[in-house]
Length: 302
Image 1 (cartoon, one colour):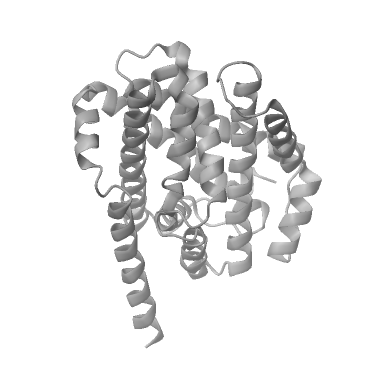
Image 2 (cartoon, one colour):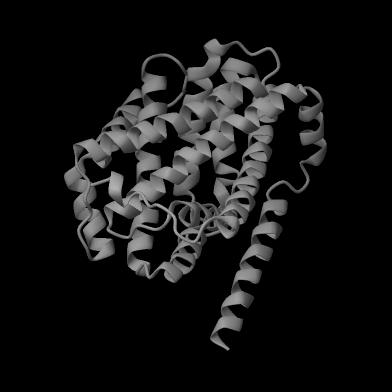
């Protein structure tokens, strides 16, 4: 009976993901179609490839955090757990992805508190680096924002404090109930993985704008990063819908114009949604077809 209930809950979870993912784009299909027609097939394919690369970097970040919590899982199974769970971000509340990952990781005897801690640290590192990248872009003149510079200096400081290993260890231990083995070297590895992710997402945005020069990479990436940070804070919006795009369009209107900025926000949403689905299905299929004995990251993260 318990197993049947668990299966029913997982089916309900996937159904909710589909419903809310569709709802996030409802009423915008004409705009999306128009934006797609203005973008080359090669640009779309390249953007999708870059987003997939960025997502893969975040998957390895999650595995690294799990290993630092002494909760390592095999790589293939771990990536499947992570990306299947990530579909939960499309459900309002911003906690469903972490809950799904905790449920899926239980088959590997991982305590839910450890998985929850990894998920919260994962979000924290994303917000920290998003604040750093976005604020630095504004403060160096890469973006023209109407908000006071002091706001971005505060965001920059908050991002730096959030990366301090001692702060991460303290907060992680409170959530996980166990030590979090985060030091300066681990922090550098984490920042490197996230740098790959943010750079990939920025490159994808350049490819989605017809005729955009690569010189716009920093501005597009900075706006996307700040939009992401706001989207995480607005917990009731599925995957940051609305809040993220609003900030993104406001910041990029001086660069692209309001029409192209809005079209880019919609295209980015579609590409990221497709990429999330591809990663979830792909790694789920790979883990089911992979060898029973898989390596984990524990041997490389000590």
